[in-house]
Image (cartoon, helix red, strand yellow):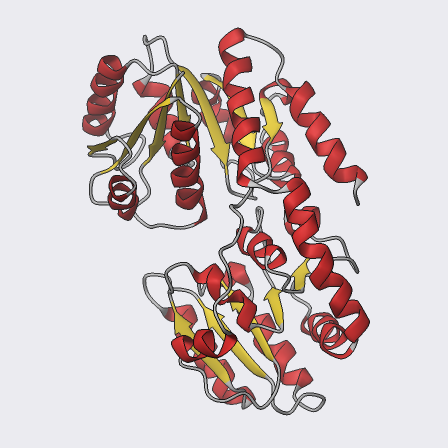
Length: 380
């Protein structure tokens, strides 16, 4: 099978990690892979570094004719069986660029919110034989956008097995953290309102009386204008908190064992790769009941779930995991088992490969994937 993978994203976030992992694993499974990406993107460089076939194109917006024409010509030469699209605006690029070509369109939706102006976009979306949602919460958003259920399928994200952990002292030294005088609560993600790190800081302020040595570690880059990052720094100062802003870190998951608790305080979380990475390393998680997190973490088993935008509830849950050693130990044991059973990269890629096969055969999408989801749900 020949699979084209399309993304016009400039940055390198969860969706781009997903594409790179998928391309590498599809190639390892014997498929031909062609990656069609924006020439000035970080993804293009990383794909080339992984020795994957990269076709760098001018890709700007779905209504930009030069990029779509170039993509159409490239697809006409490559003739992939499947064009798998990973960025929302690229659905419309793919729909136009594949017109008149024997290519079947498949998309992956990494966003929790519904598609804006779905009636206007429906003619483009009709050209997709399948739309993959990374969680049931994301699938619900697609259903709310009016996409037909018989072309929607949920394939949860998966991760590779983690490498052997580094000594905690090395990890803390690399992050530039001072000598510990209390627990470390960390969060990993972009410094943006959606990730809810302001809620974490307010929760930490509520914990200060019980845990006077508490330190908060934030790992993640900032949005373009850095406004929210400045807001967080001001908030930390006003609350009198010990907060370490560590910035973007390559392979941030390797730092997770340095945390006593990982907080995922997102206001909207489509899935939560960092949650999987933490569980796989035996790090207890407190996450919000927002989108995909509640499909990963079983409350009281691998971690605790709290309402979004609720600092008191977040503070209470973090305190429970720090103070209740039996609960903490159970979570540390259960996390790796949960990931190994249901959220491996091999399982994700096999399910995606099955979607391709069913699309090319014109077969119903749902049966096999829904069986997988029932297995995950039955473990809840």
